[in-house]
Amino acid sequence: MPWPRSQLFEIGDLSWCPSWLHQHEQFTLTKLWTLKFPPWGRESLATKACEVFKEHMQDLSSYTVLDICAGSGGPTPVLEFELNRELEAEGEEPVQFILTDIDPHIEAWQQVCKKQKNISYIETPVDARAVPRLGNRKECRIFNICFHHFSDGDAAGILKSAVESADSFM
Ligand SMILES: C[S@@+](CC[C@H](N)C(=O)[O-])C[C@H]1O[C@@H](n2cnc3c(N)ncnc32)[C@H](O)[C@@H]1O
Image 1 (cartoon, rainbow, N blue to C red):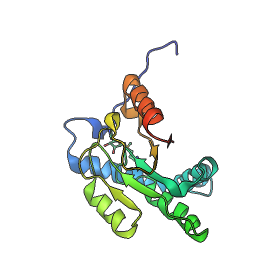
Image 2 (cartoon, rainbow, N blue to C red):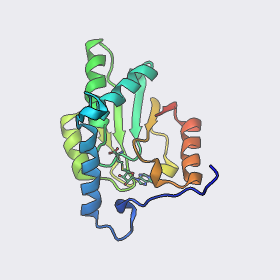
Image 3 (cartoon, helix red, strand yellow):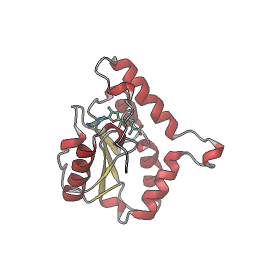
Image 4 (cartoon, protein in one colour):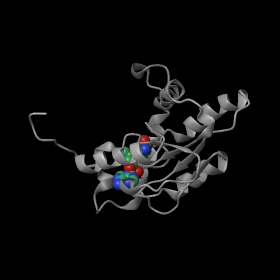
């Protein structure tokens, strides 16, 4: 680009932002994933994300999907429900999901995991810039609406790490 990159700040990233406000923001974003808003089409954004999975991923049952900037869940509860419903109908093993965030929203994640046994979470902060490889299953990292938090250098490092140590990313 011929002009310098400009980046808006998100209130949750600011050091003075109280955690209740950041959590409220995370919760609102999660709600937006399931909103059906006619100009965007008949389906919610989370349902559209399921279609992307189905179109591009093979052998979903062998994967753990790591949501590395999960907020209060984003599209993951819908992904888990929709994808595993189909896998179950086909007699396949369920795909597993893990929620992580630099600012874990434990209360929201507990609610999600209570209802959906194929979703778990890491309760300590995980920085997307240094994600450990988890377990032996194939790993897919998902980055739902989070790249605006990162500098160009960090974003490049996060993608490099996903290419080198995960099996796929979206
Ligand atoms: C815009 S929210 C998106 C939340 C969720 N993915 C969704 O789609 O609703 C971005 C999230 O990224 C998290 N985040 C910001 N910087 C991060 C980092 N370096 N490592 C991990 N998470 C980070 C924030 O705490 C926030 O929950």
